[in-house]
Image (cartoon, rainbow, N blue to C red; front, side):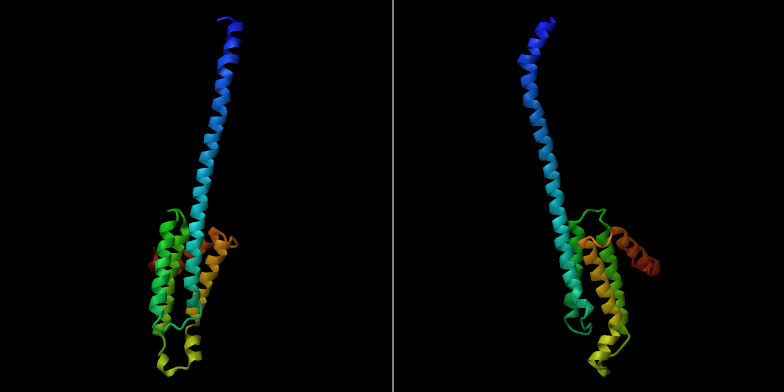
Length: 174
């Protein structure tokens, strides 16, 4: 093939093929990137929704009277929401494990609190004062979670909090 024929072939065949293939390959690449981005956005939205539901479920525990009959429902609801959160997040998302660990510690704090007094002989104020450690722990958990969801608290802070809990209470591992 002569150089003139090769140039003619390039002009007649290869340039039109390249003109079709290059935009097609670019379109395919953009489509894949958009699909991945949309999937990541959906996962982040699900995580945020589930996290917000957990924060809503924790909030009553920061002021709730643990001797109330409604306590069992609130605890059950919170545990269920943590389970859903863990199911909706990636296996390497430590926040789900941290929430499960915090829940176990919260149950220990509430158990210690409720086991330490007899509300029958106490005023409402005394009952609330006796429950302040459990209320504070609940409020701290809610604040850490919402701070993390908002991006004000780093995942490393959450990881360190979990490590601190495990160092103090190794029996709580998840």
